[in-house]
Image 1 (cartoon, rainbow, N blue to C red):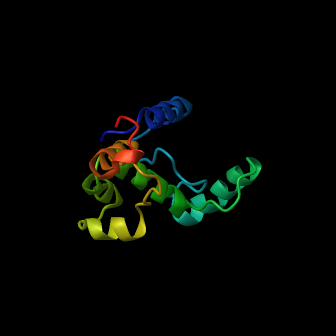
Image 2: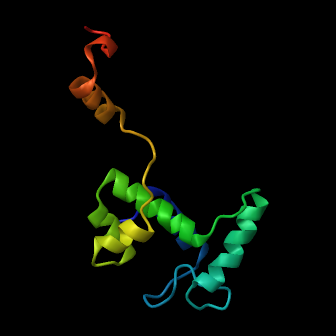
Length: 123
């Protein structure tokens, strides 16, 4: 499985803390040794964010942020696949946040194609 470098560092730090880890043991278990779920993580995330002075952030917002970044830097298909969706429509409708900014390269292209002569500094 390919993971980002910062995740690999977290995995290495965790492996250094545990004495031995069997093939069927969890790397990041809950305090009770069970798999982490939204119910386990949400309160912990809330405490960390509160300690950092950050309000109003939810796990869903983090998921949307990651999927939007993947979609922007790679493609919608890869972002949708990360979510476990077989159809990109769900990712586009509910997860991928569209930027309100105009791509400068596209803006320049439109200026060259449609700017009036008096507005063009080269004319």
